[in-house]
Amino acid sequence: MSVARAHDLRAATHAHGFADAGRPGRERALGAVTLLTLVTMALELAAGWWSGSLALTADGWHMGTHALAIGGAWLATRFAARVEAHVEANQGQPGAAARYTFGGWKIEVLSAYTSGLALLVVAAWLVVDGVRRLLAPEPVAFVPALAVAVIGLMVNLGSAAMLLRGQRSGQVDQANGAARGHGHGHEHGHEHEHGHEHGHGHEHGHAQDQAQDHAHDHNFNAAYMHVLADALTSVLAIVALAGGAVYGWLWLDAAMALVGAVVIGQWSVGVLKGSARALVDATAEPTLVQRIRSAIECDGDAAIADLHVWQVGTSAWCAALAVVADAPQTAAAYRERLAGIAALRHVTVEVHRCPGCDAAAAEPAPSSGPPS
Image (tube, rainbow, N blue to C red):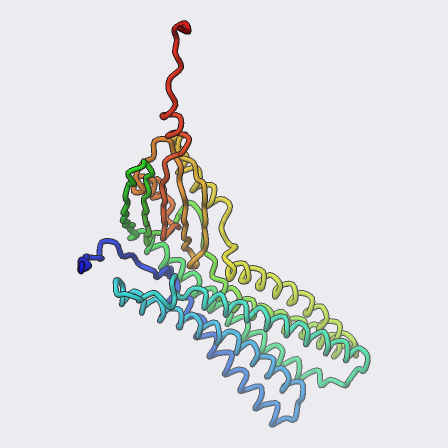
């Protein structure tokens, strides 16, 4: 009975965490905005109950929907970070990445998709409420409502400033990470006796590609869209309430609600499209795919027979490719050709000798003499 050898697998293991260095800054910003939005919601609901203002109470609950979405984005970011920390801490252990093969990035993308749906619900709610108010105008306490709208706008502008500052901080951290970035790889291969060479190569680096911007934080962008949507509704409300207070135009409030619904609806569709494409692995950049082909096929011999590129992080892509050549190089050699594309954090290369080359070598050379 044969006994399997105990191999040292450390040289063949590789990381499955693809978080960019800017995530902590964005996470802090999301947490701060969530807290600010929750405090504002509580104050508006308390003031609405105390004053008996239905408009103030409704605006408080509206703020609550955005607090839920932004808070969900913050929780998704934290959970994704915990998943990747767990995978990295158990690197090299059997089954360490079994539950989350490529880290926790898609947790954040799923949160972004949910936020897009929430934005769509807000747009629909504004349409229903706007139509209802157009058909049956109701008296509005313009001055108190205007004060609330101004406060809401200030909160939204402050929230947007926090998110932008967090994003800039994340970009600085990401640039510093790129300056300190490094790549490392490993490959293993074997050659069959019938002339078919097959190899695998893996490459993953921590540097960001400075020649191309591959950052796509759908979760953070969706949260930012919620803040902008709330700011837009506050601006439209101020315009409508000011017009109503000066000219008595009750219909203007409903008309502004419908305008806001159209704009927010368009934003929500954009968020849903971007996050849905990421969820189904349809986010490969055409320029990135072309760069991979150009780098591999630069010698005029190698040709990519099969290529798969998919996103695994805000600035990280994976690639799996099969290379066919008359005079094939090692998998490590082809992997080295992709070293300049730092956005590729995990690359698998499969190498094949072209079957036509073997067939041509087996055919006898044509005779140059006269036939006997």
